[in-house]
Image 1 (cartoon, helix red, strand yellow):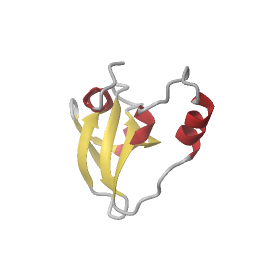
Image 2 (tube, rainbow, N blue to C red):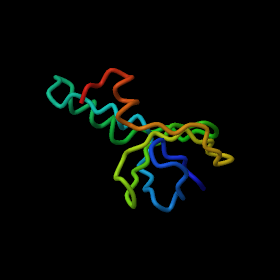
Image 3 (cartoon, one colour):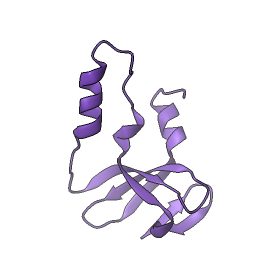
Image 4 (spheres, helix red, strand yellow):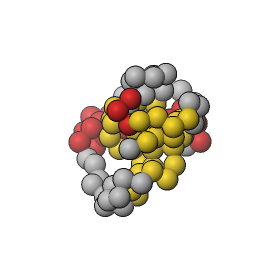
Length: 95
């Protein structure tokens, strides 16, 4: 499978490590009153969709960037690759 890295161009998926659902970008506030419940939900609850799914990938054997890859879990076709920092900023995270 080829991942078209936004900065480096096409790369073989063997250069990357799959790290799970892209919702992991949205870490809970550890200081919130219900932080324990939020972290249980964050760490253990995942969808297992058939079809388009946003995933986190880490470019371990390259520039060490984090990517959000939109991939069809049935066909493995990749439809979009974005830098995770850009996705986080677009969703309102500043750090």
